[in-house]
Length: 185
Image (cartoon, rainbow, N blue to C red):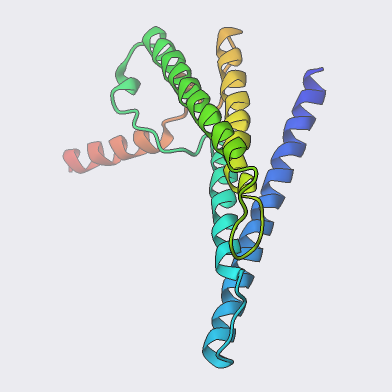
């Protein structure tokens, strides 16, 4: 079961990475072609700016899921590093519960906006605006699953990539050693 879950997780992350690459590529192509058409031929694609904006929104929200999975979101752990292991675990759990609460708020708000704008269409592309607002639902569910999985690892006594007590501080140790060498000279 764990092997299947791991392969499903890897497959979903690969799918997300492909979607990110497609969004970024299509967005760059649209903007480049529109700039060339506008400055050289005095015309342009009417829907390219709007589509690029929508792709950028999807790129940002899908990228947030990948960044959470890879533990690449910005953290300030100056004080948490100095806590004993037991307190670090409590802070980790509390912070993840707070993240789940925020994701719940995003899910509810995104769902309401998606339903509210189901009959509204973008002016240039004609796409339903629910496609734009729906990414909040996708992001909050995706990130919520990752946070719940990380919490389950902690409660089962296993380490998570994002669990602070088990992080390697090799860079910090290297800087401390360099400072000691400077002081001794």
